[in-house]
Image (cartoon, rainbow, N blue to C red; front, side, top):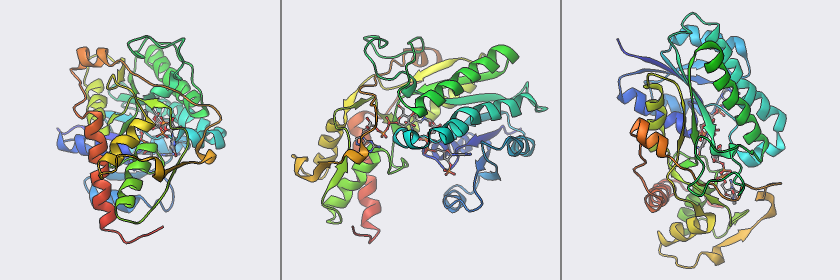
Amino acid sequence: MAKQALITGITGQDGYHLAELLHDKGYVVYGLIRGQQNPKKQRVEQEQPYVKLIEADLTDPSSLVYALELSKPDEVYNLAAISHVGYSFKTPQLVADVTAKGALNILEAIRQSRGNKRIRFYQASTSEMFGGLDYNRPGTGYDENALFHPRSPYGVSKLYAHWITKNYRESYGMHASCGILFNHEGPRRGVEFVTRKISNAVARIQLGKQSILELGNLESKRDWGYAGDYVEGMWLMLQQDRPDDYVLATGESHSVKDLLELAFKEIGIDNWKPYVQQNPAFLRPIEVDILLGNPSKAEKKLGWKRKVDFPGLVKMMVQYDIGLESASSQID
Ligand code: NAP
Ligand code: GDD
């Protein structure tokens, strides 16, 4: 019989890629959708008609019980979160409700459900939990044993979700795993994140639809991979006999400036500086300066390895946005 999976965060970047992967593997895919009029619902219905949408919200425990009853999942992937680090400073309590307590809500709904012994659970943990500080960063990059030091309400909330998942695993023997994922991007990334903001602006600049790109901190470094590769790792974690935690990363770190360099080169511009202005509105009260991950455990135990490299990722995103922007007539 086909396996059934429930994905929270179905309208997000990872929800899109994971739904596609699971569908290709023959799963019946359920997706949790929130809001009485979610504008992204139509997108899912059109592009991924095989996804069975269930109306629920991570902050409403009874709706999660209903979602589990309806989907009877073998696997639950908790991808839902308020995931923008900068925004989390503006709505810290909301972020705690959704990103931290939401994880508890779904774990508890699983624990109390009839299928609790069978359901395997994935929690979307993050490299933001490490904080990018020197004192806790091994030379080879953050691995599963590195100390946590989150630097945003988002990171702190994710750390709660991470530990409550481990706690449910240890307390109740649940098959619950955390993927500590470093930044992963692609054409499905929201334009509020720096990679897509840049790829989209570069495409618009090439087409004469935009002249200036406003950004915040250009010095920060991230370990950027491709989202399509990372959802494969999520799935692999839930196929293991024992639940565990794994870092997924590329093992390389690049600055926002490196990203600008490659993205503008893609449209034949060698000097990006005249096109970029700094706007303090995009700075955060505190920054994670550098993230570099060590994916050795996932590579060894899961046989996972990223396929797309950093230049390949930037090229993919810029080319996608050139196609998208060419087809639309909106100008600044
Ligand atoms: P994303 O594009 O921001 O998607 C977030 C999803 O959460 C959206 O589908 C959103 O639905 C949903 N959501 C927000 N509040 C909700 C609520 N109250 N109830 C139910 N759903 C709610 O994030 P992503 O990039 O796909 O990332 C997936 C997960 O991995 C997130 O938990 C993120 O924090 C984590 N993560 C991401 C990265 C990365 O680099 N992408 C790295 C590490 C960890 P709406 O459409 O209704 O807003
Ligand atoms: N978003 C954004 N917008 N970031 C900017 C900008 C800008 O205009 N200008 C500079 N940056 C810098 C940020 O300050 C940060 O240092 C870096 O670019 C990356 O920012 P984001 O793309 O917003 O991602 P993030 O690293 O803060 O968080 C993402 O990755 C985490 C994993 O490490 C999100 O996907 C999180 O949900 C995820 O957990």
